[in-house]
Image (cartoon, rainbow over all chains, first blue to last red):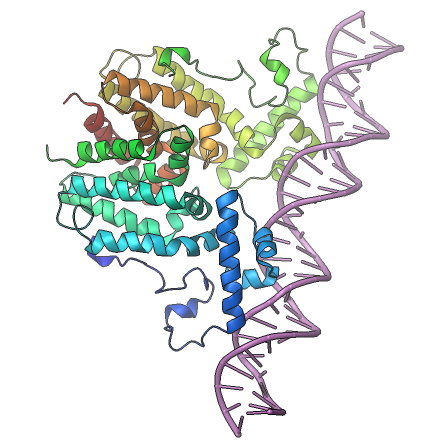
Length: 217
Length: 217
DNA sequence: GCACAACCGGACACTGTGTCCACTTGACTA
DNA sequence: TAGTCAAGTGGACACAGTGTCCGGTTGTGC
């Protein structure tokens, strides 16, 4: 199956992913050949993103209509770029996830290559809880429920965790990868924080799982 | 906090829970004092439940309108009993979950009391995957996303798992309980099955986690 | 067989969706 | 600097689903 080396930080498009989700030709044409974005379009994209960031931070769910209104933009304009609110949250989230993905592939241990699998998984958990802490509202907006698995990022996280399971010599990596990723679902993290469990405690519970499952017996 | 002994299999109403979610007085009046259900009402409830069972099995999401139409019943009638499709799925799911809860509390080991915590958790995972296998469509209809935690059953599962963590002497039971329950989210299980992982493999991956985390070091 | 409470179900007002298209704007050319 | 026209804009529209309301109907207990 998929090996970690096969996976690029962003499996779909080089950039502007969610902004042009319907133009499948983007998969073939690179940024230099397609006409550059017009000034009014860029201006509106900024307005939309800023308004959406604000709305996601204050409540859920956020509707396309609300975003359009808050951004002072027509509904047609919004739909031109984004098919739904989740894809807008995803666009906002994109660079944060990308940074972490970069660190996983080429950063220093224990997050990056070099450390034992149990330590790498533990560090991954820690980094993910930090990302959830900082941008949880966006993750909840973008990757809720089953749509979480459809988002490009999940495939990356999964390939990473799976490779760690394999490296640790633990059998059944396919089933384990999803199981080990499940506690990072935004709803779960949100529940724990709401129940008064601090981020550090969540991270250390996950570290315990990581070490128990992947540590050499 | 909550100890396992405090929790009854169904934390809310004695029966007919979802059927009368708005009549808060039911919390005080017992079944014998309230007027018994009329024949036509009972007939319609059967029709609604049967239609909903069928609809949930074949696709999602299921709307109130569809259920009403399929059951040959007016929308007002449907809303009289159930506030939304999830509560209908919950009503259908209720007895299955209740049976498992009973076995956890008073059944034979390793599911019931008596076995070591790691084995009990492992058996719980196994039973839950079987429930998901059999009634996954209902669980997906009833306990998707964050609403899963709001459902009464989640509190029960959580109290059970937490007590096992405590019994095993593992620190941080509050954070661990939710983390250990996360892989049983219906979306996660559904994803794994769709990816071709058989139920047995999911169960054995979870068993591995259970033993690694709770086994005496 | 009567009275009345429980129940029924369609109509209504409302929110949000996604598409469409006549109009406007701005980038490029001559 | 003006002209051209594709790209971009935004409001109107048709639609789907929600949740409530209330006049009419049906059972149950007396």
